Image: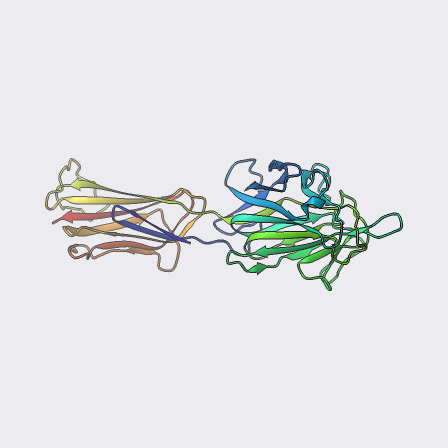
Length: 376
């Protein structure tokens, strides 16, 4: 992503980037960990669509937010009254006060499913959430039974499919299930699928937890919930799962504001190129020989670092370059530095270009380039 801005002959260019492969709680440089906290979203009970805000983790409403569009599609008429709903019915073992987004359905056949889709305003990295209460109830003469089945798929910014990694807190690598888990992972299921297995989990335990982690940026995530994966009966009874809070990283954008001012600091050229010498003061007119000082100030008012920053200014033809300096910028690349004409260079024909290359400006920082020239 690139942007440019011109201010009184000043050209300013910066490149911004998304941190790659970050975890939601350890975002890369220029990234911010955000969370969809279901207890704070104000989700309307039984609502099938809405936009929730992801906020800074533990910031209590302060700091940046990102909108996340949530929509339920498919056999939504099979959702039981009042669902989807935010509440503490399913806690995934996180304690009685923890709130999750629950969906409870009574599917009429194994061809029916409900899909919840999360659409992000920007590409997000390190997306992480848990699914609670994935479990199984066998078909018996007094119960119809069910098998929770979930398929999760992500979509990248360029429209490609992104597959998550699925894990259970009680299933070791290389295994499919365990005596402490009510989930089954692995063959013959696809890598992005999980089903209930063994028994019905307690709503407050972590036996039915599935950890969903995306290792690449996504702009959308689709979760399909069904009884159609190795179903125990053709007409399942009511079944439910719930979703934990959702964590992810976003790249905070830099926002550069530039100003350029000029001042006649002396009506004589003496010591014009010496920044250590005090300005005589009292100068009023840009007469021939007068020393003019240009100050180019750039402030990053955004939340992310501006990297690979280039700043360039070309002096008027009737000037003679004397000196330039910079301060406040960090090195943003191997070419970091200030390029100037030689002192005494006449500026006719565009020969006086001062440029700053390979610079970086952290969030909240201000950098400055000061140029001095005399009038011919």
